Length: 183
Image (cartoon, rainbow, N blue to C red; front, side, top):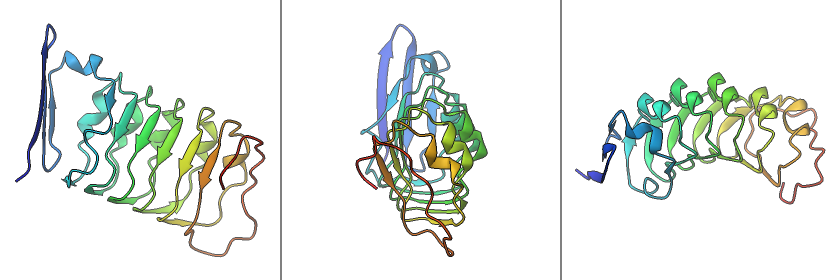
């Protein structure tokens, strides 16, 4: 069993991450001082679902769980991370729809869910992510139609990777953005 332990002791207490089935325990005070879970959690062969407790980290700006063996639906509670700007979840085994609670993630600048098993339509709430710069959705089981308004209002979008969408597209979604450098 691989167990990753990160201890950080300071005046606020101890943050302890015990991860194999990605069980995470945080001292209640340090939740307010944790800003990034990036790089250290990627590519560790973690399996099982993301624990809903991750949604109780109000200061979290970055979350990277890429290249693991995580599975199941994304917890609704991730939508509580309203300060989150960077969410990187590619190359796992996530399934289901992208959660409606993600409509609260209005500060999102980087969103990557490629190489999973998400399904359903690409949600219209993505149009509310005005700061989004990079959006990676390919390699899932999303379905047409894609709402025309989803990408049209994303003026900061520079990279959009959209492929492997099931069904027959009648029209490609309108992307009216002069910042877009990769489609």
